[in-house]
Length: 541
Image (cartoon, rainbow, N blue to C red; front, side):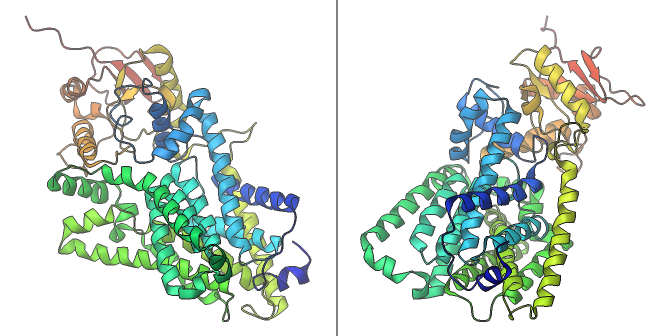
């Protein structure tokens, strides 16, 4: 940290002064390392097997041509176009690491830019970054990922943070353009942020704009508005087109499947874990209490942006109340992740407000001794968190931890059986896979009939995904009684499903106590998985 007096005096009450390129680069690197400490899980991470395989197929359609999920309509075209070439020249795991580093660096740049609007000291900005890393992992209501693997919304979140920094500086048009770029990457993350910006700018009134700058270049204002809208359209127009021409009843059934049956933990507030909601509400309350009594203009603008994000979540909670009287309307609206923006912006506002409160002399935390005790407790908390997080770092010379995308399978055996499939089956083979598997495309590079994790985005494909899940895993036609493998439902059901969807192989969990009635001997067995060939039925005489 810079000298104690300078750091405290300038923590959140003065305009930050330029500090040299080397210092700025060092700060961004340190913040990126803090974020990497939280996000450096083994590949593939939770959504990487989803995003990067789509990017690979989008850039090279011949790769796994005919796969149901990979050929469903794309909702994140900018990410796919940017990362697709990388996935064709590097193995997927290496491409993921390149994308992760870029994403963490982007988040570090965006966070540092936002923080420097209200915290003049680099040392206190590092404190805020550590707090942000903690808060964004432990205070979300809907389980949003911000510091994660290589996926579209990580880059969108980096731009949202940068846009918040622009707005805090009284540059709403620049913020509008940056958030338009965020929307191009991820329509929901960026789109909600653009709405929050409009709300916050309206609430701040004339104070939202640095008037001298606006007056000097009035013609640039209109250009900025147009550019931001055009950038946003790059993401929004294709997303809206996913439902174009779909009959209303199909849209309603697809929305029910998406919101109630597949993703209620992110979308339906009544299903959120009580502890997560309570922690999020507590974080909002603490943020509010830590706001300065006499804030600077930048602090007022940032607080307005954070409050607008909270307001969107409250509106989503109100929409949820419609479920009892107008379920179709409620589900159609709840598809749009009303709680996502606050899950990311509240930790941003909280971390900056807390760092400013700790640094502020004679202010929100009182005497210097109390501030030092608070800072010491925070340092201990961050140290403990780093020790805990280090357990999942894929470091050389230690047993590899399990990737988050593979916590529902026997990871070592699953990777080995997928490697065997990749090396010993035809490139156009199609597989029935266990329901818990989400990294088959990643490891095996073969088509699969359906995957629980990989739900498409357009209504027609969502309904087809549901039909396939029911056919492959459901006991009674619902999504509440799903088995672990199609083989559990019997040999006749397995053959029927294979014929219906063109599968010629199946991977089944090995069950020595009650072997499944499968056709022929297994082609390969490793650990808890076996590969069987499904031969087509003989031709009719």
